[in-house]
Length: 319
Length: 142
Image 1 (tube, rainbow over the protein chains, first blue to last red):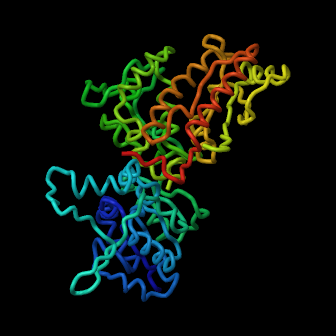
Image 2: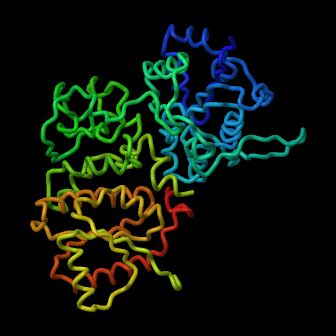
Image 3: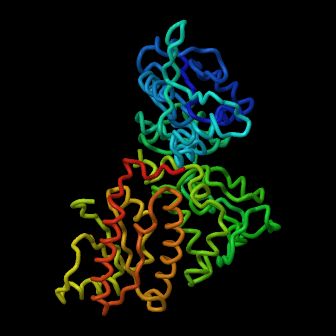
């Protein structure tokens, strides 16, 4: 029997999702035994022209990680969409922009100015910026265009499924691959695979009591109690506004949830949910005092939207 | 801006502010027609998601009306809204949206005149701020 064809690609991402695939350890051999890998630029030597030469819909499963930041990201996303039967947004970047999406708080112009001019280690006295087209004596050279904003994968192509996480946890990656290897029926398109349907607190082993917060702490500012809910202790923990599925890894290790599994089901905006959860537990009714307590949270936007700014309600709208 | 009529969504609590708005109406008070009131059971019901959705759907300003402190029908819903609105304004500012586009006011059922005055004031504020054009990237700062 013909083995199903598997493609993996990375767009605007860090490469952690590629490692997450290898984190399934020796089961990667089962992946190789059950799939024919036809494209995986990070790990194997394929060229874009190999994909271009494939018949349409010939790839059975494509795991696409990374958001869309450049014209190259978009071009390959469109190409893989055309060639794939099932295309999965793999990991937080593809699903909702993740850390690279935080750059949307700045304009392209200010990013370029910072990166190519102002950073202390940069010596760019000619003020050279990357240009999509440049004419040299030898001819014209081209590099992909850097877009104004980073957008999630589903902003440029229809996506069949989403696997959340930064990166997706190995047991969840394997659960999805195993499901497909066994030929079990897939849920309706648009579904989130490899994750739970509740919030991270549901998996958290810590003890929760009534929350009354007088000031917030960053983890290095206090001694963390090993049993008590982190939010009860005043540590900003994104558990209440984050989808379950990771197994509450960070909180079990005494580190607050950063929110990498994205918004829980039925919540269109993770940051707004987090804002709501945090504000409700502030123990004050005096506007000035509330302001003071809130000021102990460093960078609320970057904290509550750490992984989902590019997919937030306002983020999806702005250009 | 010439001829700019702001779209303002008003989330008004059932027990106080909506009744206040109603009083302003039946008393035939004159006020700007820009507010689209939405009755909610409590100002505490106003999820920040509603506000972001209103902005994303084209609202230029959001008015939230609740019972005076101590008067909430559900004891402390208005305090929750107070905390959220302070945090929300801070976050909107960081995302390049003027926090004055959100206004929280305590309006009781007997304060029809206050409602009318605040609506007029707020419409003026938003007219001065101009349209919220997310497409034109008020979001990008820095």
